Image (spheres, rainbow, N blue to C red):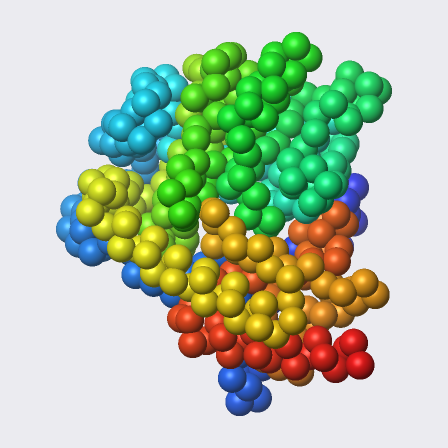
Length: 391
């Protein structure tokens, strides 16, 4: 058997990829499993999206290759949504590219800009696609620890000069996964200016822009003056519309960035299933009347999870965005050990902070993706384990 490449060997373990089999093993033993690991809600997509998929799937033309162009009407719908939601106009052909979920686009973009000797600045902890794309490009990741000290923001003033001089890409993601942090506009303005001064591409992952609470409204990076010169922004229908498995996303930005990503994609895929894109159009059309009710359910789950984990002795902030609680552990308790014992002894799956980067050690992530009753039960079990581990 041929040996693996160095770039393959550089990839860390992707914990979320292993959890489904572990869950199956527990279920086979009769364990009552509560899965709060992935950001994958148990709720239904908009009915109009489901109906549109069924209708489009019956059209043979929708089963042919979409190629990079995809369904032009999807591009137009996404462009119209960006303008209505953020006040930002993008040409649906030259300034937008459909994606098979934002994850693949984020990872593939790195292949166009990074090479040996280059650096990508990555928030730590963070979405592993940033790290994966960097390592598969044979570039060097600079892991910036996002902690309560910086309000879980990447402070660009703290980037060492020798690192900054080799940096080609800065990844940012607000509302943030896994910490649920949000970024003020003045902070985003500072980052855009910094990237412009140093000729750095800002890759802005905005997958959670619609998962917000308590009156908070997440911005697009393009609401910041000058961002069009330095940024590309990624969006997804996964979280907003409970469509994680449908793999629908898009990127927007200046033509120089969009055509670059589109060229890479032309060699690695032949486009998203066009019937899914037709369903995506229906999801956009459902936004105004459907989303508030869905968010109400998530807010109820957030409030139940916060109250339940606090009641069990955990220190928990109530997030203004995302579908996660980022929960600190007492000193001396490792996040991987807590994750494994919580799963094996209590049947609760939560994500170890360290699995999302060394900077996540000392925390675990809870996805409030199930009913308040199950979240309360999960917290009860986690509290029981915590008391055993702290004596």
